Image (cartoon, rainbow, N blue to C red):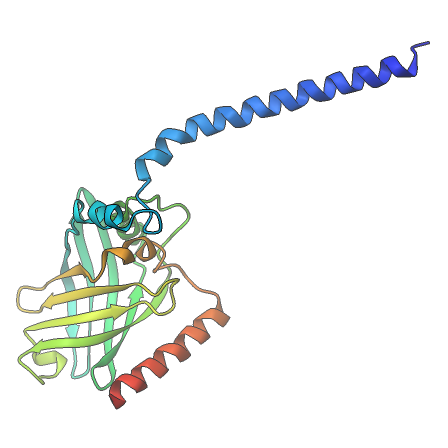
Length: 230
């Protein structure tokens, strides 16, 4: 009969072997992730603000240009299906602008298929971060501030060009973009407001849970009211 002390030492030895095997597995995984992590690592604004700013200056934003297909215009709204290519990625989405009050408009971004997820890939490339599980929602609501229309004070159906700032109030960190539309040439483009928004834009088109969506809608309505009062 085996002595209990021998059994205890044997169990301890087996446990140490298992712990060593698990440790080696974790080390191997960290080694595999190392190069990928280094590829997207960027300076932190908390560690070195100058290096953080310079990192983005060395990677200027490239406008995301697209065509306005199936353009429909009315007095206070316009809609189209966007189709474009950016750095080899073909993307698309449906967008509707509807004037609500003053210079503010409601923006409805709608998914048109896998080409909409390609827009997320384009934004992820600009931010040099992985897209991970981010996907383009079936309908994403944002709001736009009309900065300039040509001719001035003309209804949407009579505009030749439009310049707007779009706010993703329902997204984390509330990123903002610039949008320009040339209704004569039937082209548009997405521009950058601030390089610090690039990271948040990757998740700006994600579908939201109903409770968070209602809170964001109330905040957007209050902001629009305050803007009109000002």
